[in-house]
Image 1 (cartoon, rainbow, N blue to C red):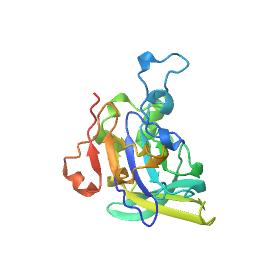
Image 2: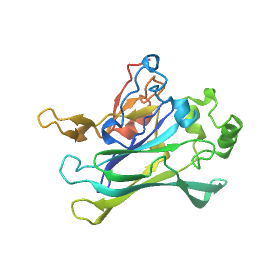
Image 3: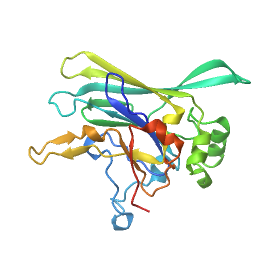
Length: 247
């Protein structure tokens, strides 16, 4: 995960290979689901398989660095993601291809705190190899269960770079503002999710963002994240990792 922003909101990307909570409401953006055995049929939480049809998701995080200042919202915000793929002739790169990456929610009418963009790695995703997409379609639209391993997931990806852009109207100046971040394939963390950032200030009762946690990730619920003790960890020195205690 690379969380250094260039003159704008900080953002990171990761792949959650088991579960993901994507909610437009900032203050519940990482809330854990209640235990399924205590839920009624009406309140039973949506499972990962039901929500994403058994496919892992690629998640991007955008943080409003002015979130704790009154009137700092971004109105009619739009998040877009473009994938860059290279075509080769032997060892030579002969062509760069730009592909549109669809997000579950790419618009935010009143972006004030934290926003998660989610792309589903399904049978139509331009970020997967053609052989992987064909297998997913043959499997009823879901990933084969034996694919849910960090190395296997990484091997199914097919892109060189991802460019994330965010644009909207500043509620302070009423002018259009924007920012972007470019990722390499190696910047993706597999099996990790973003740490919750939003908390309630006990003194004021207001919701605030702990910006010191913007670089933090935690292993996904249930474990299964990639081993970051390997040499790849040196490429993510700004990321603080917390191992999951749930098994």
